[in-house]
Image (tube, rainbow, N blue to C red; front, side, top):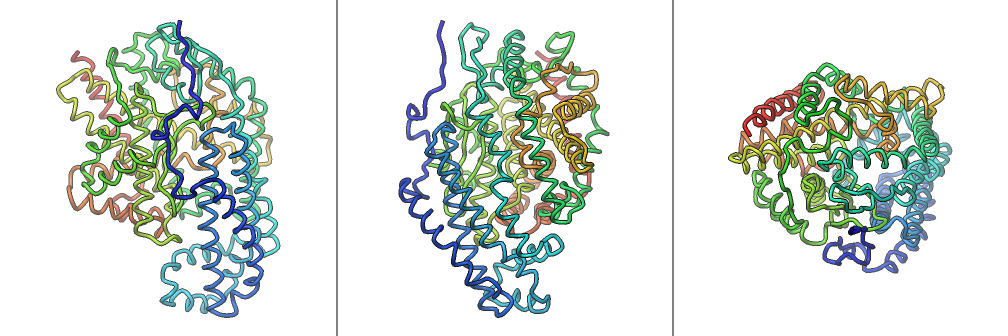
Amino acid sequence: MSFQSIPARNEIKNEYKWDLTPMFKDDQQWDSLYKELESKIEEYEKFKGRLAKSFDAFKAAIEFDLNLSRQLEKLYTYAHLKSDEDKSNQTYLAMYQKSVNLYTRISEASSFIVPEIQSIDPEVMSKYICEPSMKEYKFYLEKIIRYRPHTLSKEIEQILAMAGEIAHAPAQVFSQLDNADIKFGIVKDSSGKEIELSHGNFSTLLQDESRNVRETVFKQYYRSYDNLKNTISATLEHSNKKDVFFARVRNFKSSRAASLFSDNVPEKVYDNLINTIHSNLTPLFKYLDFRKKALHLDELHFYDTYVPIVKNVDFSMTYEEAVETCVQALAPLGREYTEIMKEGLLGGWVDRYENKGKRSGAYSSGCYDSYPYILLNYEDKNINSLYTLIHEAGHSMHSYYSKKNQPYVNADYTIFVAEVASTFNETLLSHYLLDLYKDNKKMKAYILNREIDNIRATLYRQTMFAEFEKITHEIVEKNEPLTLEVMRNSYRDLLKAYFGNHLKIDDELTLEFLRIPHFYSAFYVYKYATGISAAIALAERVLNHGESARDAYISFLKLGGSKYPLEELIDAGVDMSSPEPVEMAIKHFSNLVDKLIQEFDLF
C-alpha cells in the first residue's frame, strides 16, 4: 500500500514557484526598506495642521503619503506572499507581522490627513482639485470628501488607526488555525491508497466515485472543525463585532451599509440579489433532483454534489497544457491579452503546486510595483484547477491592464469588478470546452455538469453565504448574543431554505460556516454572485458582438479604480443596479440544466 505525502517547500522546483525578486532581491533588501519607511514616519509631523494653509502644502502632504503607501504595499506584499508559501515558517510570519504593525503605525501617523482634507472649505477644495497638477488625484480626493459625514476628529481617527492591528486579530487567528494548526488525518481513496487529507485535496476527494470514500472524507474533514468549533465560532463572533463597532463609530446605519459605501453600491443591489435568488430556486431544485436520479441515490447528501454525474471520463491536464487551454479559450479577447497572459503564467507570476504549510486555495495578489502574482495549489487530475487558473489569470490580467493605464492612486480596482474579470474568464472557458467537445456527447455532458456546478457554487451558494453574513451582523447590531448555537441554527435554516427537501442536511454541514475565510472580510462574498451575473452578460456580448464588445471589455479592464464599480460596468455594457443580470444568469443556469438532461439521455 502506497502513501502519498505533501512535499516540503524545498522539494518544489524553483521554476514552479513565483519569482518575487522584482520586488526584493533578498530578505535583507526588504529589511532595508522596512527601516527606511520606519524612519520616515516622523516626517508626517511637518504636514500636520498645514493642509488647509496653502496649495503647495496640500499637494506635498498628499504626494508624501501616497509615495509612502506605495512603498509600504510592496513591503507588505512580499511579506504576505512569503508567509503564505509556508504558514509554519516563523521568519516570514514575523516579517508579515512587522509589515502589518508598520502599516498600523503609518496609518496612525497619517490619520490627520483625511480629516484635514475634509475640513478644507469646499470652494477652496474645488480650486485645488481643478489645478492641472492635481488631475490624477481628482477621483481620489472626491472619494475622501464623500466620507466627510463618516470621518471623526483627528484625535479619534488616531485612536482608530492605533486599533488597526487589534481589529485584524480575528482574521489572523483564524488564518493560523485554519492553515497551520488544523490537521485532518489520513484517508484512503477508492484504490486503497493512503492520503493525507488537506484543504488542497478535499474537493478532489469529494469527486471520488466511491460514495463511502466521499462520506468518510466529508465527515473526517468536518470532525476537525467540530473539535475547534467553540474557538472558531468565538473568533467569527468577534470579527462580526469588530465590523459593527467600526460602522457605529463612523455613523453608518449598519455594518453592511458601511461596507457597501466605499464602492458606492446601494443596499438594494445586495437585497435584489438575495430576493431574486429566493424567487428562482426552482432551477436549482430541478438540478439537485436530476443529480440524485443520475447517481441512483435515494437521498442526496452534500458529499454527493461534487462527484461528476458523468462517469468514466478521464481528465488530466498538466499545468503547461492548462495554460495553453486558457490561451485558446480567451482568444476572443485578442492576441495582446493572451500573449501577455501566457508569458506571465509560464514565467514568474505563479506559485503552482501545494507544499506543506502553504496557504490553501488560490488568489491573485500584488502591488503597483510587482507582478500580478497568483498562488495556486494546482492538481493535474482536477478540472477545478483549470478553472481556478483561468479565474486567477482574470484577476492578474485585470491588475496588469490597470497598472499599465492608471497612475498609482487610481490603479486599485474594487473587489466588486474584480470578480467580474475572473468569472468572465471562466465563462469563456466553458464556452470553449463545450465547443471543443461538441461531437463527444459524454465529455460535453461532463463539461455542462461542471459549468452548472460552477454557477451553482458561485451564484446560489455565495448568495446563501451573503445572506448568512447579513443575518449574523444584524444579530450583533440588535445587541443579541452571537453564539455558536445561534450561528449554527441560522446556517441550518439557510440550508433548508436554499435546498428544501432536495438535499439531506447532515449535522456536519451545519458547521460549514466555520471554514469560510471570506467571512473575515465582511460582505465580500456577494460580489462573487453579482460578478458571475455581470460576467455571463459581458461574455455573451464579446462572443456575439465581436471587436466592439471586446474593445469595450478591455477598456473596462484598463479603468482600474478610476470610477465607481457600477459606473465601470455600465461602460462595459451591464447595469447591476437592476435585477436583470441576476435573472439572466439564472436563465442561463436553467438552460444548461435542460441541456445536461438532454445530453445525459443520449449516451
